[in-house]
Length: 263
Ligand code: PGA
Image: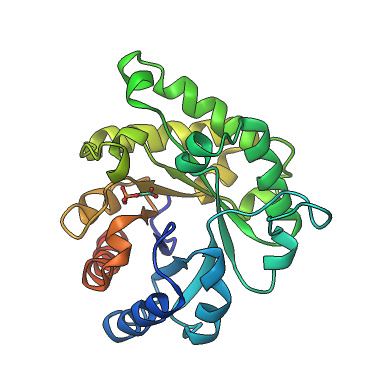
């Protein structure tokens, strides 16, 4: 079972907050989030803020994630930052977020290349997968998610899969794409399905150990209903992560849900 794993709460700040605003949010988060051994709290600031935030955070309390990076290690790629450049700075990188896929044309192949670049550089990928409202209406959700998972993990070894995190984020539930509140029982069914896909590829044990997150309009009121799901090991939080009280309450919900699962 997945119950003894640390709960992972990731705050995706997207393209919000300048360096000064990010620093203020970090100070507030310090004040309002206690250290919980059973909860891992990860902040994903913009690329610009990663370095200053890395010097301000208490590393016992917070880890850092990039939101994206380029799959080549270095070279003449104007405007890009590589996973190699981030390796001393972050533990994680979000990869294949739906906004990257939709606005920046990230294909299954690009996402796959980024996952392997992250892993090659010792950065744990948080791979985002999710279906659109139209795919859901056409009953294609499982197929779409299956293809996203299989292609993103293509070429990884059974050792490399250990560090991978997969976030199921139905696009229709993300606040900026519609923000429909997803029913927890439907999310549990999809998380079970993703675990099964990974079991088919890498075996039962790897699938059981895999950390699966839910993302899409998670806030302080809904967080517990997702975090208590048997196959949910954490949350990827967008807009609510910019509000320190909301985010602190989501972390507290993660602690509570983890405690309940261990009972
Ligand atoms: P949201 O975003 O929490 O604002 O819906 C989630 C995400 O895009 O990762």
